Image (cartoon, rainbow, N blue to C red; front, side, top):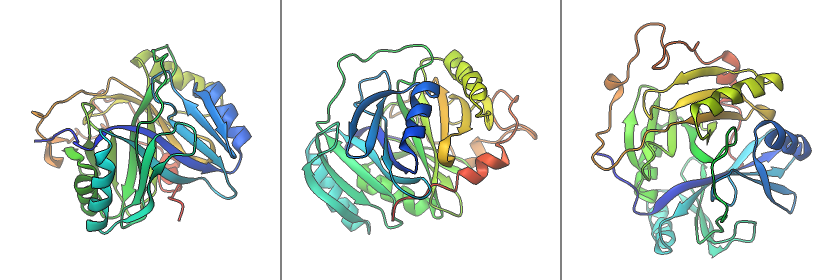
Length: 300
């Protein structure tokens, strides 16, 4: 059985380094349809229409895009102390001890790294927007972040021991991990690297996912996988390679589960020959997508 996390209530945001902040701002506002929540110290913070202060933080930095951290929201203040103890016991490191957050969004946070260098910030008491709503063609919040792992079972063990995530489903190539009623908020790609696989943005409906595909194509960003509907999570999807080889997904209708959900295994998630999703109309992920999914690594 799977279970909701006792320490983490949600995936809040992802922070990246990018080499051209102006170009990124143009893309994520005019094409991807995020809004600017704040600017601070060479960074831009983008929000959706939901309550989260920001979903994406982009920092100006030379060189290829890199992932700085994945931010999770704590269920309670005491979770920060528990995460420190658990991270050290699991072979991780405490990169930043518990302290007030100085960047936009605020709150109190701790930052830890797993043994392979994946960086997670756990924040409590961060700012929430009072005007949360849904609007056609605009992302609401993050649906999930997928991180590659050369040793999925080890990474899974860290997520379970430190953040009390639980396995919702296991396929041949991915471990889906749950912290709340969403089928997964973090997933681990079973690969030969530890890069960022993709970031998924939750849209209000499937029509918004589809129109987003048309909007991206008009802007010169073709659909690299999709449209389709996944097996685990049951969500509709379109995948793209955004600026600086960051893989991004529009998704909708993520399956909602509770603690009675039984985690599936690879034998439960197989497709007939030639199919890569429930609908059976999508081509496989493009070679360009597969290359980009191993390009954006964590800041060392």
